Length: 169
Image (cartoon, rainbow, N blue to C red):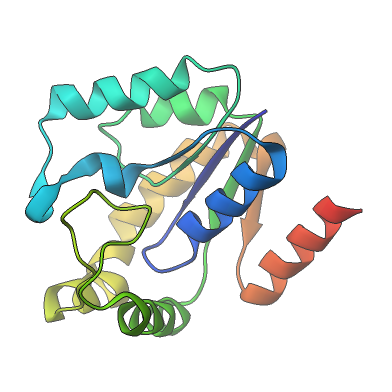
């Protein structure tokens, strides 16, 4: 089984990916942890692509994140299921604030070592506006449009919970 979890910042991609990996006993790759190196530096592109390629070669995986430069088209093409977390802006911001309060000063397990949780004006702007511009939405939807047969769009926590309950049946 191969699952791509994509969507907006703060929508819960990493949480859902981790839960799916545990449920199915398959490797999980968090692209935020690949993209960033310690100290919130951008990882060398060739090294980041090698890390992703290693997982793509596995027979099963869950990969969360968007990142076009990290084999986006291949991930979408090879995924058996694509989950698009399309939660409202304010829901995502609320989740990010809660996450910040929970992990303040510590590095989450889905991030690169040495990248302590942070919340700044630039990230808030990304969540509310820049990360949701028309171009970004068109880009996400264009990649999915050719593969609608394997896309599940989840627009609320209630829909995420319902999806999870259906997996449990």
